[in-house]
Image (cartoon, rainbow, N blue to C red; front, side, top):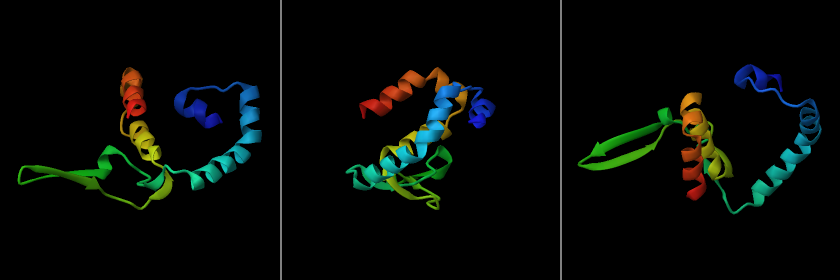
Length: 108
């Protein structure tokens, strides 16, 4: 958990850190089990960020798609959306626009 402090300057309460370390493996297995049975499971790009998109204006019609499917995984459909929002914008933009970004995702 020291990575949280190193990257985000976030220090976790010692009791919470202990509980997470003790329960996370079992919890992850429950999530993976649910994910296999979920109706929301789909193919995810796995590394969806702005620099993996391409766009082409062909005869006045805008077309787009994705490059680099090397990290494609099966999982809940919102994984790619969450990954793109967290990896395509810098921390200041995310902090300044957090409410709007969460509204867009939750209202879709």
